[in-house]
Image (tube, rainbow, N blue to C red; front, top):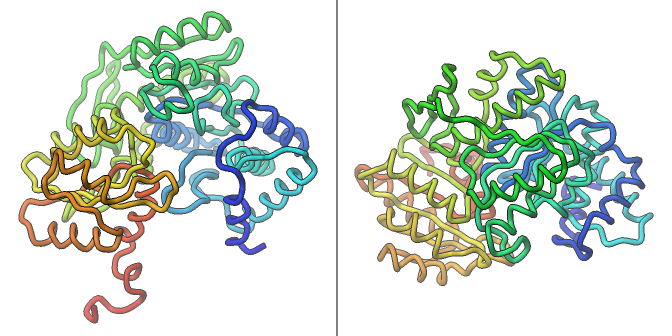
Length: 436
């Protein structure tokens, strides 16, 4: 197979499970020799903050000298982002090889293996064959029936913030959603809980951990002092120790505190992780499309978060760092989200909005999204990606004290981001800028 053929082979599979539960992924991994049994894990579930938390933890472990696998979703620019060892994506030739191995195992089974089950099994096999010391494993959806939950008790589980999202699959209340996330809690395991979690969700984890004799760790933030914060990072102090993270927003501080508590657990399990590795790991953390600054002049901020809690976090970042600026916005969203609860937080901060329709069957049509945005910003129009980019960039470069915010969906971020970071070479090929 070529690389393109290999990726198409994955995407041809069902996106969501035709059979609820872990039977299919269990059968597939049995067929592949259960590579996950040879790995140690940090398992991360939650509604928001999973990707950033995984990035913090894997970066610290890498700085401590451990060969560290990282499995996350969704990807933003390149499919191979989902499979990383020590900061490097899986090479194309190795991905093709793993797809062939996993496909052969699927063909020997009488089961409809979904895309996520397929790539999860693939990831376990690659991490095991590569000799990873530990894998930081992000849950795809929920927890209880997520394919990643096939693992035995991890070294530590981390629960990030819980909010209303994916309600058609996980339930329509915080406690129902928390119960699904709590499905990753294993008998006798260690569980770190987000330090600012919803009280309803906290009660669920109290009960589940007590039932399963799990050690529940709740971060003490009584000594937390947040210092200077801007679009490029935040300083804070906890228990007399100063930290710097390269992200903006108090929610990112809370995510990093969750990571700190995971590191404390790992130290009790024999992992040698110095304070220097923690500080260095924090400072070297980077994740695309999560409050990511793509340009400083003009300021271009991209965030793929898509629920109300994400919108509140984005609004706070805008209020703290872009107050008084004329902000242009490109927004794209999935139609199955709670659209208005997101828009009411973010769109009133905008001077102009250009809505787009990501290439996904769940996407909201650009004109329909623009209509919804006009409730909060009169200058809202639906456009295709290229036209939207041209109009917002023209506005930003012709308007004093302006900025650009790109938000609403990781699918949209995946399509728009290359045009921003690629510059003239991406837009026009290798032509010289003076010839444009």
